[in-house]
Amino acid sequence: MKLTLFLTAGLPSLLAAFALLPAALQATDTPPVTEESPRYRDLFNTSAFTLVTENDKYFAGTDRHYTNGLKLSFLGTTRLNESPDFIRRVTQLLPTLRADASRQLYKVGVSLGQNIYTPGDTEISTPDPLDRPYAGWLYGSFDFQAKSLDGKTLRMVEIAFGVVGPAALGREFQNGFHDIINVPHANGWDHQLKNEPGLILSWERRHRLLQLGLNASEDFSADFIGRYGLSLGNIRTNIAGGFGARIGWRLPEDFGADLIRPSGGDEAPARATSIYFFGSTEVRAVARNIFLDGNTWRDSPSVDKRPVVADLNAGLVLRFPARLGSIRGLQLAYIQNYRTKEFYGQLKRDVFGSISLTALF
Image (spheres, rainbow, N blue to C red):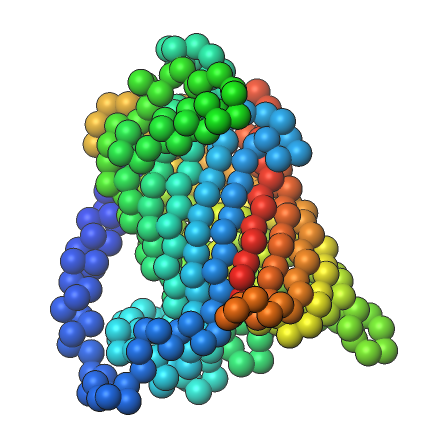
């Protein structure tokens, strides 16, 4: 069976929990709504919009496996007692977000994204059955974060839902873009994974383990951040852990730029110009990856995945204040990522770049 025993037991429970979510939220005691109650538009008072594009052409020059990712995200900052009722209900329902509300800053966000995966040889019409299948993943997500006021701990929960298969528009996006840049089509999309709805519940926690001022004014500083988390769903099920380090001028009061990952993203206001370098690593123990294992309930192309995968990356972040209408700051980040082999028979490790632009309000 393609679906592991863990998923067979865990996924139905997860789906049942989400089915009961509306009733649970209604049952949670919250203050009555009045004319003075917070509104969702209040989240725009301190917020960030981020566009991330990832591609294996960025300083890598390949065109295989995880070949393109695109994600647009919004995060708005609030205190719990200033939040709309729905946000307060969610934080009470999810144990990982529960804490002394007076000691937390909360963020709520939404994201839209698409990932595209192809085999190494995209010229042939019938893909090699021992190579990675064609697949697209089109999704949206709700994101919830709670950061301690001392800036040392960040708790994150993401609920992502979408579709894998032709409905994810991987063929249309990739070959349409290839037409624009005058590059030959990928010819094996007729053999992509079949349509399947997808759900992922992700939880992550990050800790600032060490922070050092490297000059008298402490404008030049460094920090060291640990991270660990869990993702559960029919698209992806894994546990992950890793570390990251930053060094630079006026490090922002956040946990750094990130790849397109579940629960990724945390942006502080741009109070001053800053520039910093960083490096990080993450190791994942993988129980389920639909883009390698194939469809959950239907026959489809698949490969024999490796149970452990690691990422190693380095990047540069530039952030500066700005006055462009409501925009109060801009951030530009570049990350180069090296990923170990994900399936048996894979000839080379993968390399891809990530470019993100954030508008801070």
